[in-house]
Image 1 (tube, rainbow over the protein chains, first blue to last red):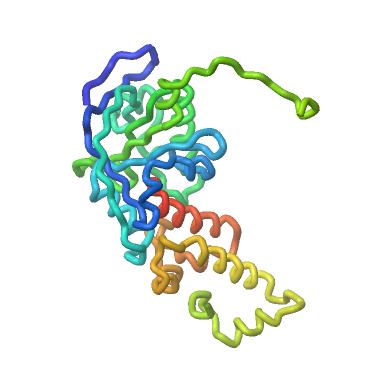
Image 2 (tube, each protein chain N blue to C red):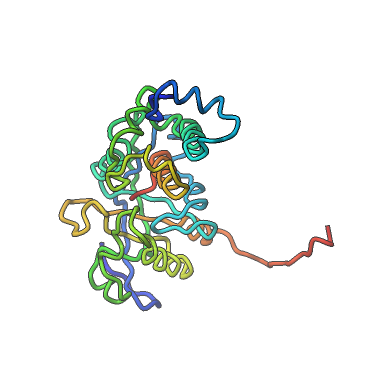
Length: 180
Length: 91
């Protein structure tokens, strides 16, 4: 993934036709590209009531590892979808130099979900990435923080920022309830 | 349901007749489990819910889901794991 220049203080990367995976229970496979659920929950790189995200894995094996960790083999049949994704404005948190620039330690990004303040540092970065209208970020996986296994990292995409490239806000009006 | 809750059938019967709500804490756990049983539809195989709630869960730091239903925060964590399974949100 080549580094790209940008007006921000940290380097961005691009992915071109790179393959990522998402796995859902088969009954829910039609919702594979819905980001709504992440908008209503606190998650590592999305914030409840602020912005949602789509989470992908860099390998099917990582997806399956996450599923097994949650279901212990008791889940319904899962369906894994392989996507070819092209994006050109991503923050790469798997890179040491990116984390150094952001003054964040790897350990801050991979705390288990049960740990106190597990999402504080990742969400702070996510807010910044979202506010800068970047398309998303690459993140180390809690299951392979050092990136020793090929493809064991996550891609987090912010659909709202993708849509912004296609839709222009013309005007914002505030309307008090007394007017309707 | 008694098995899934980890209690005897007799205890479950007592709860159901517990008009004074003397078993409030356990009753809350009972209702959370009822809610959970709805939430896991299409996610956990129906015949495996009892197994799933009784066994250590890696995503929950090897805690047992059933034991987490005793308080709201724990219930929230169990809910989150189920939702992440359903929606494919990464750890």
